[in-house]
Image 1: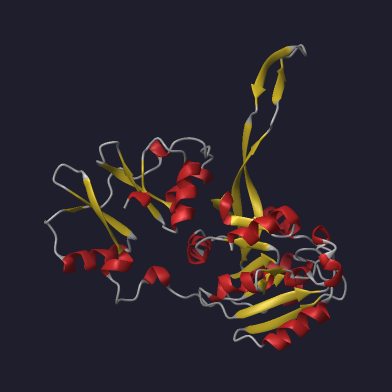
Image 2: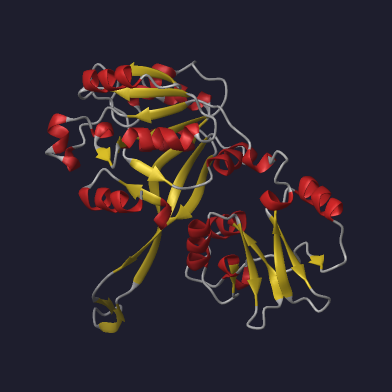
Amino acid sequence: MNEITIYPEVTIRQAMKKLSQTGQKCLVIVDSQNFLLGTLTDGDIRKAILKGININESINKIYKTKPTVLIKNKFKLEDVKDLFKKSKFDLIPIVNIKGKLLDILYWDTILINEKNPNNKKLNIPVIIMAGGKGSRLEPFTKVLPKPLIPVHDKPVIEHIIGHFTNIGCLDFFLTVNYKSKIMKAYFEELQPEYKLNFVEEKEPLGTAGSLRLLNGKFKKPFFVTNCDIFIKTDYLSLYDFHIKGNFDITLVASAKEYIIPYGTCELNKDGDLSHINEKPKYNFLINTGLYILSPKVLELIPKNKFYHITHLIEDAKNKGNKIGVYPIDEDAWVDVGQWAEYKKAVKQL
């Protein structure tokens, strides 16, 4: 129980990390005497970030102060099952008559033999952008295409595909150019159970130019991912976020904190020193390279032209399309396309 309880003084960043570490979608807020104060979901955190609340602020103003609870010895198991099914809670706290937290009931333990709609399967297409040269990983990419660089006993691309097959995705499109014959030979010998389609670029078309070749192929929103990133998140919640928000493009963004290791000088209007900020911290939402696109935006991509995903996002926004941002914790994203992060991925997996 202690692993998902936190105090209201913790920061949004700390709460994000705890959710990422535990794999849960909800935290329980208590005071120093273990009295229940509320609950905080990953959705609550996303809403706060998208409203512009600094992730170094406390969760005090963003958690739910009136959660659904159960009073010890005042409920029946069948009623709890019905409550879980109706409300689709991930957990329900149990308190005594004074409100002190005694226990927590989880969906997967109460309904262990029943289907969990929160763990539904989702079979939608996945496009993996795998045509780049991977110059940041040279000299290995002088020999192998970047998606086949190994992490433990599997290449990067198999780890990425595994994230999607785990939620039921079985239809993959790989855009290829650099060393494409090696890529095709690898999967031909692998003989995967999922369906694999190669989309051949005759010449490099950037991070989105080759998507135009798939215009008209899809009837519903689909995933697009770079071939050198590992994203640890709830892909089903991400897809629901896109659908419920009625977005045309959703991009996954990592909440990153950067600390300048020096004192920065602030000047006044006369050019004199106003004050020194000692090792200031800055927070940004960084584009990770994982997206959900609705089919109609593919029409915006010019034919046979070098064109990046950032161009598509900008053009879509200028056309009045709705762009969503899905924040994740910085530890939930690893960019294995550079050596420092590659070594980090090897340690994590």
